[in-house]
Image (cartoon, rainbow, N blue to C red; front, side):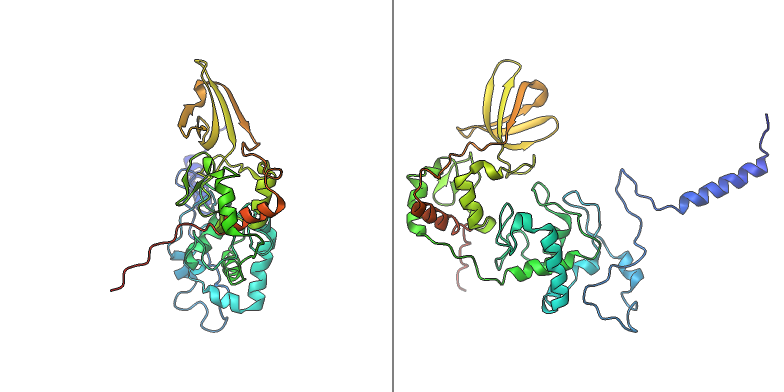
Amino acid sequence: MHTLSPRFLCVLLVVGASAVRGQDHIDPATEKAPAAKASVPNPGQAKGKGAGRGRGAAADAAAPLVPPAGGASRLLSETDLATDLEKIIANPADLAKGRQIFEMQCVTCHGPKGEGDRGPTLAQPTLTRATDDRTLIQIVARGINGTEMPGGRMKSGEAPYLAAYVRSLGRIPMEKVPGDAGRGAELFKTKGACVSCHTVTDVSTAAVGPDLSDIGARRSAAFLRRSLVDPSADVPLSAVGNQNFAFIRVKTKDGKEASGVRMSEGAFYVQFRDITGAVWSLQKADLVEFKTDRTSPMPVYAGLFTPAEMDDVIAYLVTLRGKKKAAEPAR
C-alpha cells in the first residue's frame, strides 16, 4: 500500500482550506448570510458620475439588515427601506412595474383594485398594519407572521415598487354599496343573531367566531356577501395565528368529546374555543380522535335575509372599521 509523504499532505490541506473559505456559506443554526457583494439599487435613483460615491456599494453592503419575519429568507437592505415611495408613484413607468407585481402575486387575496377579498382591503388611505412606508416595504417583502400573508416571493429590489403601488391604491375612492346601514345593524343583532358568535365593538363580546369590529377595513363587500351566502367558501386554512376558524372535533383517551373553533395548532398541540366560549388546550398525544372540518359552523343566510335585508346587513358590515381613538383634549 502506498503512503503519502508529509509534504504532499500539507499541500492538500492548504488547498482544501482555501476552497472552503471561497464558498458562500449560510450557517443553518444561526441563519446568518454572507455579506452582500453589491448594494440593492434604489428604485428611481439617478445614474451618473456620483453613483457609487459616499454611501456606495461598500456602504450599502455593510448597512444593517432587517431580520427575517414571516418565514422569508431574503434580507432587505437599508436602501430598500429608505426608498421614497412618492417618487415611484409619480413615475408612471415605475408605478406600472409595481402594478405588474401586484397583479401577479396579490389580486387573488386583495382583489384587482385592492378592494379586498380573502385578504384585507388595501384601497384605503391608512393601512392598519403599515402606517409608514418602511413598515409597508417590510410587509410586502416578508409577509406577516401568524397570518396567511406570505413573504419572500419577490426578487431583490422589487419590494419598494410593490409597496408604492399598494400605497397608491389608498387614493382610490372607497367602495360604495347599496343598503341602509342602520337597518343592517338592527338585523345583525336581532334576525341574524350574529352577536351570539361574533364580537363587535360596543355591541357584543362573543368569542366563538371572528371579531368583526374592523371587518369593513379587512374585507370587501363582495367577500362579505359571499360569506353570508356560502360561509364555508373561505374558511382560513393556515394553522397559526388568531384568525383561523376551522372547526375542530376531538376525543380524548379518557372518553371526553369536545368541538369548537380552532384558535391555534402546532405539531404536538391544538387549541380551540367551544360554543360556550371555553378555551381548550390539548396535547395531540392525548387524543384518540382528531378531525378538522373545513366547513364553517356559521349558518347560511341566503334564505334567512331577503335581498334587501342582505344589502342592509352588508352596508352595516362595511362601516365596521375598528374603534376610533378618543380625541386628545385641547391644550
